[in-house]
Image (cartoon, rainbow, N blue to C red; front, side):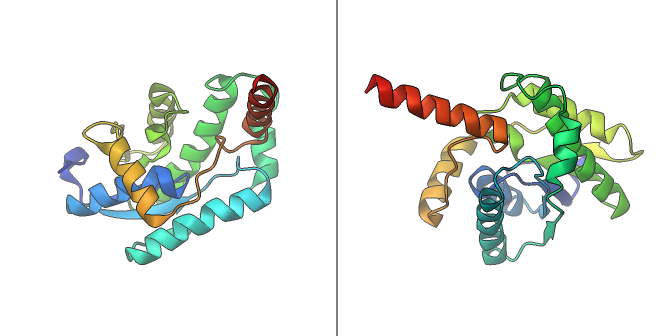
Length: 198
């Protein structure tokens, strides 16, 4: 069982993909907390990848009868937001701007629709810097009075193991890179090096 800030019973959960969010959704539900899943990921490239990840989330939330909010892709706005940081390494300034854009939009939706708490599935991934994600969430919450960002470490207490188990049971598509064009290019480079080394 987990407890939300102020013991709130409703949470807007920003969701990046089905594997990262499935165990969080299950843990929230089992703890008597009602999640609304908010899909806003303008970073995901190419569009086929975006559609694939979103359809997996939809499949899971429909199975669990959870409300799903689908925001626009806004890829061009994302490129504008990270301009100048294109060649930054993973976990650098580009990721700061990306997280701030995505969690800023989540916070705005939460405030407009009377949620008191919002959270994200981003930090459960081993590819992400949890502190970096939580800084972006806290920064977004500061813009809206009475809105709280929940910096839960979803990896602990068996969270990652549960994520892996549900992903396997549900047969989720598992992406091989974070999501953006630049992480996609890096994944291609890694695959090439492995191929050459093998």
